[in-house]
Amino acid sequence: MAKADYYELLGIARGASDAEIKKAFRSMAMECHPDRNPGDAAAEQKFRSINEAYEVLKDPQKRAAYDQYGHAAFENGGRPGAGGFDFNFNGSFSDIFEDLFGNAFGGRGGQRRGGPQRGADLRYNYEVTLEEAFAGKQAEITIKTSVACEPCDGSGAAPGSKPVTCPTCQGMGKVRAQQGFFTVERTCPTCHGAGQTVSDPCTACGGAGHVMRDKTLSVNIPVGVENGTRIRLSGEGEAGGRGGPAGDLYLFLSVRQHPLFERDGIDLHVSVPIPMTTAALGGQIEVPTIDGKKARVSIPEGTQTGRQFRLRGKGMPRLQRGGVGDMFVHVGVETPVNLTKDQVRLLKEFEAAGGGNQSSPESDGFFAKAKEFWDDLIKD
Image: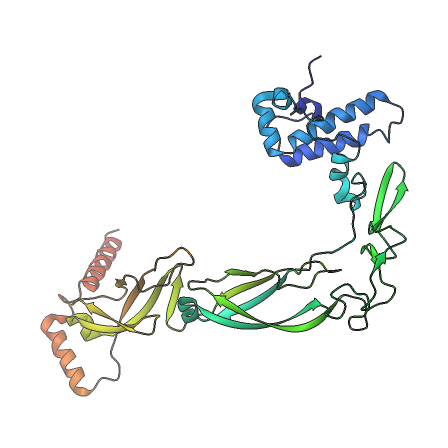
């Protein structure tokens, strides 16, 4: 007898998403689970079939193999249910409902809940200047965190004694209770999920196994860091529980705004005012660079506000991948103020000699277009 198509068993299309597959299985599993249909062989067989289908379709690799080869993909030792897949009534069913009942479906029998636990990860925000982001630095930071108690070595028990297995949960950290056809697991009220109890607590940490301390760390800030760059310091987070490993510390970097330079990825931009005479006659100017040096820029005669000049290799280094960006110099022509009488006289002579017309092509072009606009309005 040919096996039913897995997609048809769950009542879904072949292009169904993971969420749709899970939703379909949850609905059918609730309906035909043997605990809800005691003694019903047909319901039991149907549950086995949809469980088998879900085990394949929820796994991307198994689903791809099934889509290409059908049931033949799992024959000769690879068939679901024979090659390491256990279709009891607790596997996928508990996976589906654990988010609703907090790991309520105890098909993981024998899995120890207590024992060492990994410590929590920590976050530390650190600000660097643009110059430090350019050159890198060795920074020292001080964090307040929990560290393993030295007298008890993180166990929480007084020196010379040891924690004992919790008598209530037998070291599981969880206790089970029957609610209808569900077996619900809850945190053990005696050991609070630790799986162990301490009869003689350490006086240094009060039985907690960890104490709060200020910890100073040396951190290497690499060149080229940007806003949001994250540095992971393995094992520098909070101490683990019951002798477990410590968590990690994540350093989140931000780069302070610079008074001169504006950053765009690995490129830098700087706005530089230049005198009207330099813009008109041409010349050279010196501009600062992020490495603290100076760069010389040649200004051609007739330069207008907004013109930019590119200085290759004067930008920021690229983080980890190598290479350096460019620096763009944006010039703005500055109108002179507080003129002396001689300067005013010379400018008027320049204007009288036609300097305000032929020497200002952009102005001439704009006002020529404006005149055409006004003339058209009068004609209409």
